[in-house]
Image 1 (cartoon, rainbow, N blue to C red):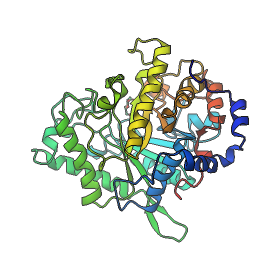
Image 2 (cartoon, protein in one colour):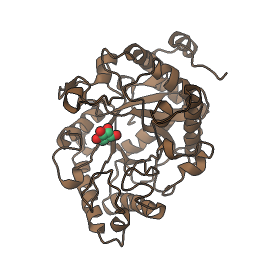
Image 3 (cartoon, helix red, strand yellow):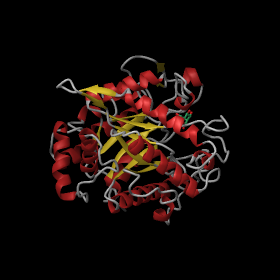
Length: 404
Ligand code: BMA
């Protein structure tokens, strides 16, 4: 049997450091254990704080796992629109270390995103998060820029949007709207100067699946790569954007786990276009369509993390579980026995820097059981608290100097 993650007390005794110094321990151990030789961003002119965030994610990754949650302060399962509230914070007292937001519908000029969250709220939250020392990441469920359909449209639109395509101007227009959104993420330094808060930008996600118009099927691989490369070239070279860390995130369900390297590289735009080697994985965490046993899922989950981490190490980049979780968290012990267990079961898997779980849909508004973090009163509350208290995990209250 593989190494089983020890209980909180045993591990605390082994590590023998107070939680508050977790980050300095991480950096110390990273000095000897990290495979990274000063990982650098694909944006050479990235701001010092953006570079520091990336270096610190790399340094922390061996010894720690940062926890993230989508839309965490916008609403929870049983509340909506209450300032400074989060289902994660209700249980742990801390915000997650990573805040995820989605900017779908920015491209059509709406004031709200596709889930009804105001864009100016998201902007303010990114600024507030930075000011508290937390991290933000953005995904983009963009509507089909040609048909006007949703992200889940199946039209062959990518070919029309890339350079030379008849609707290329529409892509530029959408990216310009993003640049405008990004330019409002202004934070003020202690000397009064201003700069943009660093953000992990994760466009065109899960492209190896066939459910989005930029995915496999509606788009072909070459056009997808052209779409990705243009996006980064335009932002970085044409618009001079210097606060973004670019995350690439295929979906695990469409990767052959026995050949994960090859599966992962579908649509990979090249080492000069990607900072974070990400993975979206719901499949191995109890997805209802995945019929393999829990035991097999565990092994395959570890394998998927190790594979992504190995690719990242080969490329001297940071690995992350950019999206995932178990809808309604029905497994007792999900947080410690499945997530932490997998992270600590393998020397490569543990180099995953952060894990972001998806949103907690508000039950009254949406009338669905669609949540990935527990809420106060949920049956995995105690286990989540154990996860939070484990020295390996980092929530916002334990992040120190991530931008230095
Ligand atoms: C999906 C679901 C949708 C949502 C979208 C963007 O995975 O949660 O309900 O609209 O993400 O947040």
